Length: 259
Image: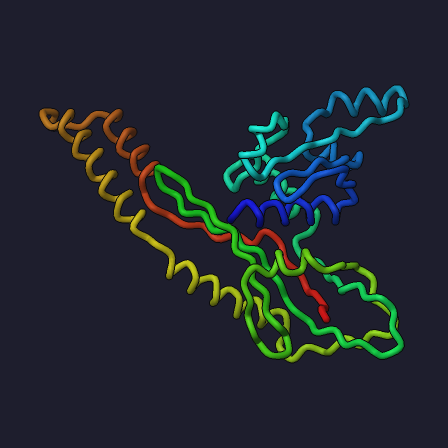
């Protein structure tokens, strides 16, 4: 997941959750959190308990998130966000808690002629390759429910459009030919193919490192015919650390009607 994709996700996340973007550019953004979002992500329960107990005016936090490290050279202060950062994972978790799937429509300026909107299903996937090191990637896919055409970077594409949860007047929404459930099956097949085409040499490297460290462990215990419990514990810990595995999670998605 590139910094531009992360930035797009952050901007969309806060906008959809009514957090005002005070200022920013393509490298950072400063947002004013709502009371609800402050409670969800800022981890200051004692503050909110006190404010609510004495009926004081609340003061939700402002948050500056930097998606381009070079901006730090200009004296900017804030949280640096990348795919492995705790803050980004926290926002992914909040997204799941608040509802993974949405239904949205492209907002259009009223015109005399009738406008037709086409249904799409969009899904953001997080793929984690896990061993002694972890590599995470975010893929955003969209599928046209009329034609079956699949596009990549769907999240970035719809972020450039004005979307709303309310249907516009004088707009015809095409009934889908491909059902959303069937569309999800197709996107799952696409993301599986994408993963299979990734460079998987890390699996061989992890297994070689595993065998090497296991050989060292066996060397230290080779004179002991009856291996002690510590040997088995270290061996299990080594397996948990080096055994290659992959996880695939849906971060969020939805049904989108686009021009």
